[in-house]
Image (cartoon, rainbow, N blue to C red; front, top):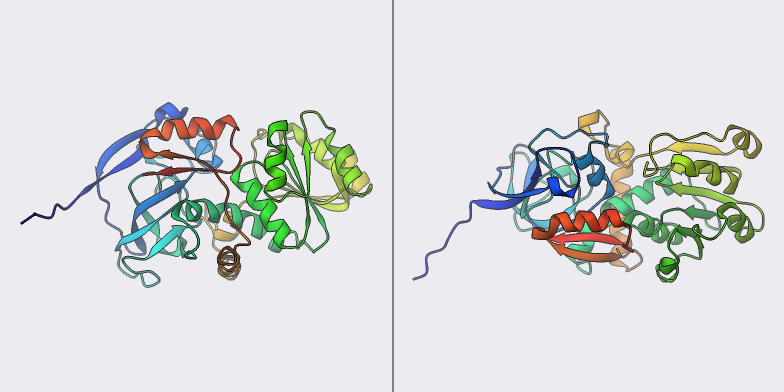
Length: 345
């Protein structure tokens, strides 16, 4: 008779100092036990995000407590639940959405602890890799377009730095809501890929004037909404490209936190400038932000409905094994990808 072996450890990624991908270490650690309100997952796939690069480097809104776990997204199978959890059961296939610490509840590893309130079931036509890639990108775009900007059919949306997961998710979401999408990339080689991903127009900012092309595309009006994760020195160009009375939403700081404000252009074009994070709606207890339960529930239902219908489908650029987590981070930072970078434990 074969004796069944119980596995009590899992390979987990942690880091003990700020730095580049080289600080990420894979360790064999005891399986964690979920506390009240928590769930343990056997991780099937991990979606990587720029926020984790910033967290690893010490430039995120959360600061790591060493040794720190890392990771915001994953899909997996529930294998243990803590006291008081009623919304999921052992054996459920779920994905981690948003609204929890990427250090304390890091997802990089064969096993992860998550808040039960941050879990969502996903449609059967979605793979674990797609489920691990879906939620942050679609929730980020949904709240920005529906709750913040009140985007209307027929309006134009300029989506900058569009080749990552968040950008491609924003293209799909804007198209689903009836908007005309204008995507930007610095790389001529990604132009066709963005068009195939659904962008109505693509601007290669390396060799085209952003504001002039936006004005040409929109018949001189400018973009009704600009959705930008870069900020930094690019804001003045965005101000020149926005419609009179339009909106600019900054949802990242890839260009650095020093961002010159184009005051005279703002006077002339009367645009609204807003900063925004997904946590404004999903909540994040570590920085004191509560969840907007109505908006969150509505967004999850909308995204699941449209993934099931095939109208939202994550684009995956490349997958890596967990053993290559450093290489996966280097690839994420290289800006070579068109879509989401995924790791399989």
